[in-house]
Each structure stands twice: as C-alpha cells, then as structure tokens.
Amino acid sequence: MTVLIDMVSDLVCPWCWLGLKRLDDAIALTKDEFETQVVFRAYQLDPTVPREGIDYKAYMRNKFGPEDAEAASAQKNRWAQMREALEQYGKDEGIPFDFDGMTIRPNTLNSHRLLRWAQGQNKGHAVKLALFHAYFAEHRDIGDAQTLADIGADNGLDRAMLLDLLAGDADLQSVQQEEAMFRQLGISGVPTFIANRKIAAQGAETAENLAGFLRKAASEFPLETAQA
Image (cartoon, rainbow, N blue to C red; front, side, top):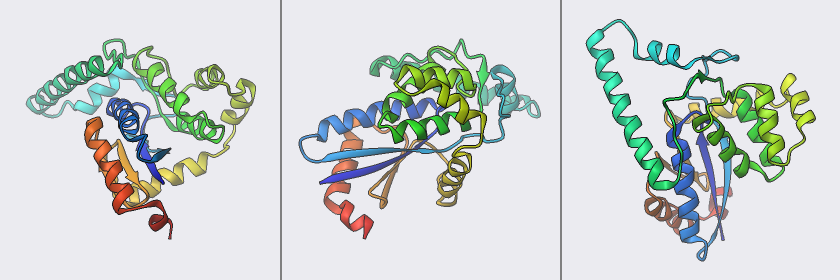
C-alpha cells in the first residue's frame, strides 16, 4: 500500500521547511505500515515579487505598511514573536533558521522549476532541502540562475544544462499552471499536504499528527480509490 502526498509549499516559507522535517519524521513513524510517496508542488506566497528579487528589509517594510503606525507596529510585534517561535522550533528540530542575516526576498518561480527537474531525476527531496538551507541558513538568492545551477550541481544535476534551461522558458508555464490550479482549489496557505488526492492537512503539524493523517489516508482513502 502506498500513500501519495502532494506537498504544496514555497521555498521562502519557513513553516514549509519545518513541515517537511515533520513530514519526514511522520513517514519514519509509519514506514512499517505502508509506503509514502511525496511529490512537491509549486506555490508562490507572493508571485508579485520581481523576477530579480527585492531587498529583504524593503520588502518587509512594504509588507508591514506605513499607513497606520499602530497597526504596523502590532504586525511587526507579531512577526517578531513568530520569528522567535520559528527559531526555537528550528533548534528543536535541527533546522538552522537565521533570519537576522536575510538580505534578499527572491522570486521563487525559478527555484520551483529547478525542483521540478530534480524530481524528474529522483533528486527532489535533496534539492528541496538544499534550497531551504541556502535561503534560510546561508542567505543565498534562490531566484538567481547561477545560484540555482550551483545547488543543482551539488546534488547531482548537470550545471550547464540547468543554466541553459533557466535561460529559457522550459516548464515555466507548467509551474505557473500548477500553482494556479492549487489557488483555484482554495489553497491560500502553505504548507498544505494532500493525501491520495482526497484529504488535506494544512500547516506544520507535529510529526505525530501528520502520522495520524497518513494513517487515515491509508485506511479511509486508499490510493486506488483516489485514482478511480
């Protein structure tokens, strides 16, 4: 028996890295019960970010908004609290979040293209982890073609071929259509985990909760039914 998980996520989403770590742990908890196949699906939290990216601090200032100083201050406090929580979760799970050193907010369209190609060569998981680490721990621009080619090459992909593909429009429309499909399905937050194309869980749930989600999918929504 196999449980198919479509993980809808973005590469600049810290909760998505946390969610992947917990999904991996959930799969380890259920590995003796059934197999789990994970497919990474594209989603951009903010597709309006310029393709060349934008200064991180400028982006955050714009996001908080200057119109209402009190509301902006409250939002900044919420972000500070969330950042502290994320950093603590990261320490607990071995994820090296480092928000202080952020310099750029990239457009993630090209990173999703790279991930699509990596999955085609059974290297999706390694590349996704590498992209998360590059952005959140090393503060690299994961919208930049050279950076993406380096990450791909470090994980066994052909660097020259990646640069050639990234310079053109290969799979650009496919990635955009995939994202549009999930938005049309009503997904507005990530990570979202869709099991056997039938049931969904949203957010970085604990490994135990995700294991329960996987078990429910296996027992109540088997893949054969989902594909019928």
